[in-house]
Image 1 (cartoon, rainbow, N blue to C red):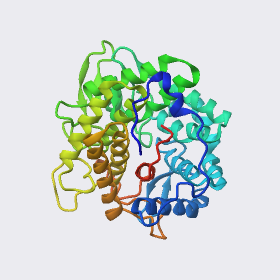
Image 2: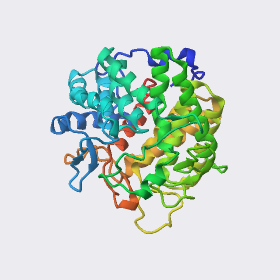
Image 3: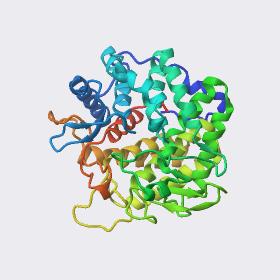
Image 4: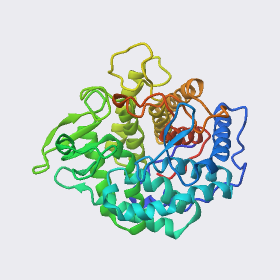
Length: 412
């Protein structure tokens, strides 16, 4: 894959123009290439199980390798749809397009249901509606995605320069509410949001509104300053005084401790800063991407799949997180495509190393009982949600495999 210069806001159309899917077999998947062969298995698995899913969105894997599906709304609702659009992009098969559109009505409801709105709107609309528009030119999908982008932009807190993660009034995790949660969410940003910024850059180009891109860039700047620690590790979340915008401090939401480095949070930042650099050309994003990549590489040691939190006590049978490995693999390969020389080789090698680890330890794509691609995902270790399939792990595995095969167009 040829590296090129970063794309600036005025050039975004070269990334976000409608990209027609390749005819089946155009990319010539070489079954002797382990990454191409794994990609072929992912596509075959999707063909096998998507009619079982119907219009339901996978949420968490069960012990029998089937899915528990999302309730009425969940932040993970678009990841299986994203894999279907990747399969359509790779094969051109109408089947995958039809299955990806099975939940269109959900996105209409999402736009008008305020209790469902939080920082994850980019995940939800980029992997569904933006993907549909980019691959097919469908205007209804474009309008839905633009609506989602406006909602995401409305979460921007100018007094602090960040997108607010959650609202105090919104129920969290099976409608648990309380004063402690309300206090926690006040003035808080979260590492995951870096993966949602591309929706704003896309909408800025589509609507000719630079304010949307400015919001995305300001949030990324704040994340680089406050989520990324001096040693390159990261906080999962960071809070600001809602009245003054003054920084309060970092804390975890799903990691081992406030001062620890939760591996999936670090992976969100790896992919997110590389992505923001690709879309904005801002030097601070490249430097932040390099910093979090170098620290993740160091913290991995000799492991092939990242443990769930790099600072948790090392114990026998300690949970790993295949989703963190998949997100980071895709992020390393993206960053490699944006730089040159030895640095490009370093990040590309690391991305493939993570892919190798996933394929050697966690791959389920040749298991006829499995409805997902990867085992050993750690959804939420403090709540006991470990060692399961995760739809976001599946999506990023497929993206990483396609990046390894030379793809450069995605829905971000």
